Amino acid sequence: MVSWLAGPASKFRVTSGEPRVWSSNGKALRHFCGTCGTPLYYINETTLPGLVDLQSATLDDPCAVPPQIQVQVAERLPWLVHLGDLPAFERYPKKGP
Image (cartoon, rainbow, N blue to C red; front, side):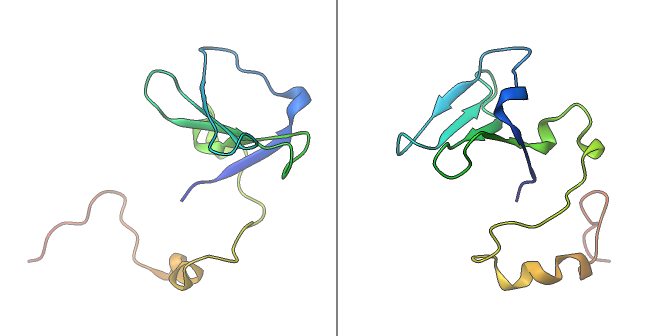
């Protein structure tokens, strides 16, 4: 799962490095770090005209822009609705007793 942050393409710029681009259909352009392969942002003028969809975890401070909505939930797995009800661990849980 990933969190995205959409913003105007006119205000978006890459300040360091040169992302690599991959497209399976010529419309959706997926940009990745050219060194480690981390997905960075997505551009699709057909679906999201004028927007850049940025993976928010790649921000210097991803907590600065918390999610406000859930999008594309039509194919969501049924158990994701109750994900917040599951036990949470800060690190891997310890094995049994």
